[in-house]
Structure formats: C-alpha cells, structure tokens
Length: 618
Image (cartoon, rainbow, N blue to C red; front, side, top):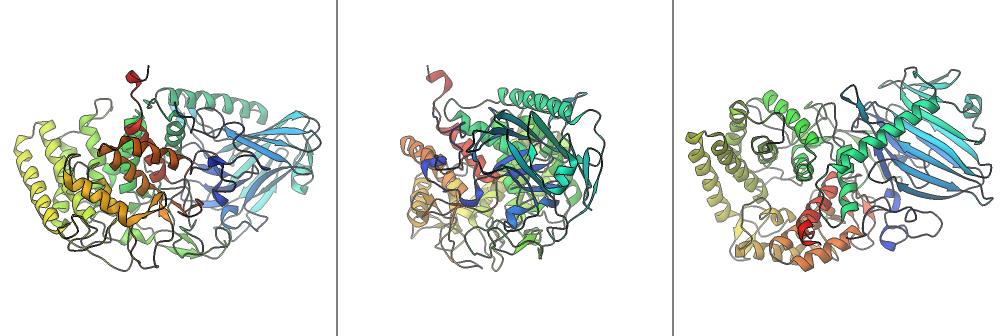
C-alpha cells in the first residue's frame, strides 16, 4: 500500500521539518487545513489560526478573512503560545478533526483540537453553523494569547461586540455569532495571556445559550463527531492502494457539499489568484453543474450515496425551475440564479493581490456542455439500486427537455468549459457533452422500458457524433481540437475516452492524447490551453488537467507510466493532503481557490483506476 497519504503526525511541522513532497514552503500560503461539517467550513493555517470562515453558509460573509488580508490584525481567530512555538499538525485519523501541538522553548506544550460538530441526533444529522476549539495542556505551564477578531461586510467593518459572563457576542449582520467559553472573558477582552492549567473550550456558533457547560458540550461534540466520521469512512469502498489520499479527498469533497440544499461548491474560497499578480481572481463558492457532476460521480464510486442523493434533489429543483429557459452553468448553493459579480474594497487580497470579488459573471454565460453535465449526474438515479428515490418516468421527461436543448445547441458557439469572457466559438468538448446528454437519455429510456424513446435519442446522439467527427477532428493534425475548424488544443479532449465517446482501442484517442501532451505539457503538468485568452497567456497549470491525462494514459494501457505520474502528482499536495485549483509548473507552488473539488476528484478517480485490485493484492 502506498504511504503517500495524509500528512502524518510528524509531517506537518514548523521549524525546518519536512513539508509535503519534501519541498520546504512548496504550498506557499495555501498550506492550510480545512475543517467543516457540510454546512460551514473554515481554514486553519500552520500556526493554528483560523484565517477563513464564512457565515451562515459557504458563500456568506467571511467573518474570518485574514487569508485575503494577511497584514490586518482582524479577521482571524488566533491561539498563540507566549514566547513562540514550534507547531506540529495532523488530522485525526479518518476525520476532518485537526490536532495542532504547540511546543515552546521552555518545555511547555499544549494541543488545539479544531473541528465542526457533525453527528446523528434524533435520527437526523446535526451540523450547526458552529466550530469548536479545545485547548489542552500537555506539559509545563503554557501561557497563550487568544485573539478573537471577527469582521463583517466582507472585511470592511468590525461587528458590534457585547460581553456576557461566559460569552462574547458579535453582531454580524449576516448571522449574529456567540463565542461561548470557560476561559476568563476579561482576559480575552483585554488580550492578556491565559495560563492553561488544564483545558479551555471555545464554541463559536449562533447567538444561542448552550444547554451545558462549554467543556461538557465540547467533549460531547468531539466524541460524537469523531464517531460519525469514523463510521462514514468505514463505509467507503476505497481502492487497495493510496487509501489515505483517497480518504482525505473523499472527506474534503463531503465538506464542500451543502447538506441543507444539496449544492456542491467548487471551493470554499474566493479570489485566491490563479497565478501571482494576475487579474484571474474569481469567486468559487458556488455550484457549477459541471464540477458537481464530477464530484458526485467520484463519491458515488466510493459508495458515499448521501451527497449524490442530496445533489439529485438540488439539480431536479433547478431543472424544474428553469423550465424552457437556458440552463446556467453555475448557481448559488440554494439554486438562486443571480450571481452578480463585484469587487469589495474591504480586503486587500491574497498576499495583497487584489481585487477580491464576490459573485461570478459566469452565471450569465452560455456554456452548452452544462446539459450533458446535468443529465450525466442525474443518470445515477436510474441505474443505482442503492438510492432511496430511484428515477422514474416523470424525471425522465424533465431530462428530455434538457436533452432537446443539448441537441439544438450542440453546434452553436459558447464560452466553453474554461469560461472565456471575451470570445465564443463552437467548442468540441461542449459538443461532446451534448452528445453525452442524448446518449445517456437513450440508455435511460431503455432502462425504464420506454422503447419508443430509445431510437430517437440514439439517432440524435449519432447525428451529433457525425458533426463532431467532421468538424472537431483536424485531419491535418490528426487529433480532436479545441473548437470546430480550429488547430489548437485544450485538455478537455483528454476526457473523450472517460466519457465513452471514444473506446480505448480507437486510434483517434491515442493520437489526441499524444497531441495534447506534446502541446500542453509543461514539466510534470498540463495546461488547460496554451493560447492567450482575455487575460493573457496561462501562467500556471490547472491541476485537474494532469489528472485527466493520467486517466487517459491508463485507458490507453500505459498503466506503469500513469502510476508514476500519479505518484508524482500526489507529492504536490500540501502538508494536510489537500490541493488547490492551480500549480506553478516551475516551482510547484499551489495557487487558485482552495480546497478545489476538481483536484480532489482527480485523486479519487486516478486511484480507483490505477490501484491494485483487493483480490489481487494478497
């Protein structure tokens, strides 16, 4: 079994100890851990400070926003050992519970346990907008300074603060917060050091009174949350190899899936730039139907059907509400359509690289592949017998509306999956996804026994295929290209085999994969495309494209090479086993929004395809 899994208890240290991949500082400012509970998510840095958290949901107001304003003393929740510390960090096994050990030069030490409560209560999942921080003395007489400094209105203001006997109330307009603790409130308010003789518990959540003491509530939350995640992981159908990496990826995807609505965000952050000093600063805290399809497909392959079922409910609502209107590529977590994009002045930006944007203009774009993404995701409902609510004829008729739209637009210009803002063309990948929409509808019709619908959908799929083969295939180059009649490449062509458009034995698949590699490979990674776009030439590699390349190599029978490339890519994760959207193909530094679901899906998909089979391993 590979040992390239989660960062172990000694792999995440400050002070000269190995980083992930044995490249010191490689992840840069994105050496972050994520904690969460599928309702709220927070990012913890290597000094045990919470530097990002939005309320009351993933796309809400960032009350902790130091990630995008690192020089500000506000927008963070710090726990610092007096006199400085070496910090060791690791996730507790098979969970998103983070343990940070702070060791001082005088021999004093304490641990910080960070998590968001999630467990079964009264036959329902209890996952409040809440995080818990438990401090425990390990040795000596540690003294700590706790800085609880929330912001509001996207970093522009400090919320009104009020104090009680055992709590601090922050009047955040989006969601009033209460920090309840058994630490001395006066010391916290004045910023004076606390002597940790035993333990302190901090519970941040809605402005409500706890029904028990902070210590007792924190202990209960911890034990139940730990039990929940151990049971959840135990039920995953993981591959034999790379188990730690797959488990961490699965947990991370689970944290990005909103229990309340079923929507799945592309990442928990906004405006982490794709490269240094680039204007490519986007808000990814929304549900792209394309990204979500890949997420639910990966989780379903692992046997985590709960997120799939919630997402199916989410997408059904979107389809029903859209009616005959054009389907958007991206929606809010609730399914709202208006994601008006604007820059906020209250935050300086990641490492000072603004602007910081809220909303995403992509909601107004035409991306024709979205019909295929929606239908491919919902297809699971008709074939997976584990689901509690299987697909029926009513749902099939709703999907047929999307299929007809896919058929109508398969050869029409769009912004494409890379969301070009200044140009449109007929993208080959968009056409292939329109083909996939019709192809899957034919299969669903057969599964349901709607025989009179099989042939028409099969005919539409074949008609689209003929158009793609005639206009998306460049006979001079000998490969499928980015857009109809073009001569450039983009990495989405690597998915032609994965989507079933081409069989592994089709020579066109090998020719296309080899052409894409020659054109787009930079070092160990693949670019999305290499032609300048609205913002110039790409400066970093989009991580999922390299995963797609590895999957394509495996399909072509180049298993050993694919395994070697996969192992190399795993070493690019940060010390906590996580990946962002982009990577500098020269230095290996991570860039882009974090943690990126696309990238974490790549870990699962490649491991499932490349791992030794369980029954062949012994």
